[in-house]
Image 1: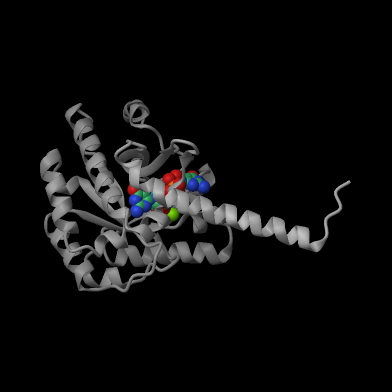
Image 2: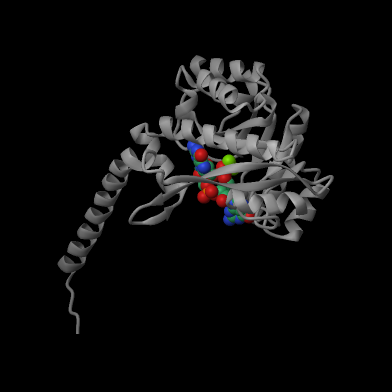
Length: 276
Ligand code: C2E
Ligand code: MG
Ligand code: MG
Ligand code: MG
């Protein structure tokens, strides 16, 4: 029978901790090769207009197919990539991949859909960010109006003039902006002050428990605020018909979630175009 004393327990704790630290350093190193080894791919999740119940666009969501670990969630590796600055080339790869995918759907006759791409504030902080996006649009032949950028804050970054110049330059060219996970984390109202934001995305934590009085008030408040500033409201994490109906009744403009579809591979997306 195992007879562990507190020192053994402590030893196990330390070795588990070491294991974790080792793995994270490992993952950070592996990020060096991931782009060249073509280990990244994008899934796409439909965005549905609640008035027409039709798909109007999709969000591109990054996946990492790690050679030993299998698929790793962006929740795990994006923060690491932000720390190591790998998020810069990775983010560039994402924009290019998403734009060329949408362009090819447009060329196949699936017109008028837009694509929504997550960008880290670390990317917005780079002087060359706007130029990179505009070059990519030109190279892929996608019209700027079809690109939407979701500002995703996982690290705190003081809102500054580099960020606002990037945003304004892209905005002038017709690119649209969403504030992701609105109401959580570091996401502040600063963005609303300096550019006209096109969408507010209500974080899925509020939708998950939408029956709570507080969450309902927050949802209503975000919708009211959004409409006052001419932004459309997108709710993420919509999993049930009940949530869908509630949001529609609250005049939430767009929904996204497992109720409609999970994020899927591009091949499966073409099937959805005919259905949704
Ligand atoms: P996000 O931008 O808020 O994306 C929505 C997340 O909710 C996605 O997780 C999506 O798979 C998940 N989701 C969608 N519908 C449902 C639902 O009905 N229920 C539940 N429980 N979850 C749902 P995912 O794909 O794991 O991405 C996590 C986060 O990673 C994203 O959150 C975004 O912040 C970040 N991310 C993803 N792709 C990129 C990227 O290309 N660049 C950057 N910088 N961040 C990314
Ligand atoms: Mg997003
Ligand atoms: Mg979101
Ligand atoms: Mg979210």
